[in-house]
Image (cartoon, rainbow, N blue to C red):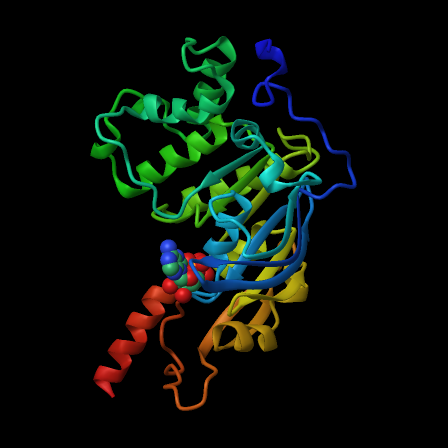
Amino acid sequence: MSPELRPDLRPVQDPGADVPAFRMRGLSLGYDDRTVVREVDLDIPHGATTVLIGANGCGKTTLLKGLSRQLRPLAGTLEADGRGVREWHARQYARSVSLLPQSPVVPEGLTVAELVERGRHPHRRWWGAPSPDDDAAVARAMELTELTALAGRPVEELSGGQRQRVWIALTLAQRARTMLLDEPTSYLDLAHQVDLLDMLRGLAHPDGPGGGRATVVAVLHELNLAARVADRLVAMAAGRIVAVGTPAEVLTPGLLAEVFGLRADVARDPVGGRPVVLPRGRAREGSHPAPIDAPVFLDPAPRAAAAEIGRTLL
Ligand SMILES: Nc1ncnc2c1ncn2[C@@H]1O[C@H](COP(=O)(O)OP(=O)(O)OP(=O)(O)O)[C@@H](O)[C@H]1O
C-alpha cells in the first residue's frame, strides 16, 4: 500500500457546512460500570465557541473525554464530522480534534519548544525531520502564547501559568480544526485569561485568523469569562444537559440556582451587552447566606474557602 493511501495520511475531508463538529444521541459515558454522563442529545456546531459550564463533578471533563475518544460510549452514538468516532483512524482524528487536558503531566527534560513540537506529531512520520510547516506552526503557536523568549527553557522550571501556556501552544501547534479545552485558563493571570479567550474566539470568528472554520469546545468555571467568549453555553447538572443557548439565554438567576445552588443577580455588561453574574450567596435551604458586603467570588474553590471561613467565624 502506498503511504499516500494510508488512512492516517489522507487529508481530512471538509464535512460541509451543515455537518456539526459533534453529534451526540442518547450518549452515556462513564468509568467501568459507573455512568457519569447520561443520555445526552446535543449537536456542537463548527465555527463557534461552545462552553460547558456546571458544578464540580457534574461530568464536563467526562464529556470532553468522550469527544476526544479517551472514553468509549457506554450507550448511544457519538459522531465527529458526520462519522462515528470509532470509525476514525487515531492519527487522522488527532489532526482533526485536539485536546488540552485538565492537568497534563509535564514530561521530564523537555524544553518549551520541544514540548510544543509534540503538537505536530499527528502530522509527521516518525522517522521524518520537522517540515517547514511544522516549524512555522510551532513558532506561530509560541508567538501567540508569548513563549518565544522561553523556547529553550526546561518546562519543569516554569511557573504554573507559563506551563499552562506551553500546553495551549502545543494544542494550537496541532492545528486541528476542533479544539477541546478543559479549563484552559487555569493558572493564568487575568490578562492572559482574557488574551487566551479572545484569541480562541478570534479563531472561530469569520473575521479572525481561523476564518470562522475553527471550532472551540471549552470547559470554563469563570462564568463571566464564559459569557464573554461563548457563542453557545451548555449547562450540565448531574451528568445531563440542562440548558443550551446564548449566554443571555442560559445565565439566568433560575438556572444559576438550579445548576450551582447559587443565589445571583444577572446584570448586563454595558459594553457588548453580555450577561454579568453577581453572586449573592448560596441558594440552598439551610446554607449560610454570604454577608451583604462579603467579597464576591465566582470561582468555586475560593467560594468554598470563604464559606468555611464564614462558618468558623459565625
Ligand atoms: N477516572 C475516573 N474513574 C472513576 N470516576 C471518575 C473518574 N474521573 C472522574 N470520575 C467521576 O466522574 C464524575 C464527574 O467527573 P468530571 O471530572 O467529569 O466532572 P467535572 O464536571 O469536570 O468536574 P470539575 O468541575 O470538578 O472538574 C465525578 O463524580 C468523578 O468522581
